[in-house]
Image (cartoon, rainbow, N blue to C red):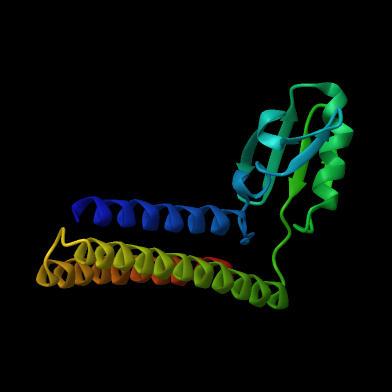
Length: 184
């Protein structure tokens, strides 16, 4: 029974970690390396993550600096940034690619909040699916006579507590992200 709880907890943790990664890719008014580090660049015909082709830094809160290790990659990196749905324009000075992060419009902020809510809802669905899987596993143990009915109900209560905690964490993360997005 403890193994089922541990597995559920581990999977719920992964769901919230994934949500944090998704939130990291959402643009706020501040520059962040997570905006671009996972962008795929067509490097010699192979889609490669940007963080494997260049060093990425944030010199100030409004810009990102990308320094490719291979001079031939400049054009490919610029193209992938322009093609992305980030709405950013790279500036190439021969040594660095700079991306200035413009302030977000009110309309774009509201759009980003909607996207953040969608991500958090997907994470909650994942957590609830994990709860269902754990409860099914507990019922199977009871049906196989490995645990008593009381133990099954206690296990289901523990799984529900775990689910409630993770859903609360997701709500808190969403609240913080919304605040971050709406901040001017």
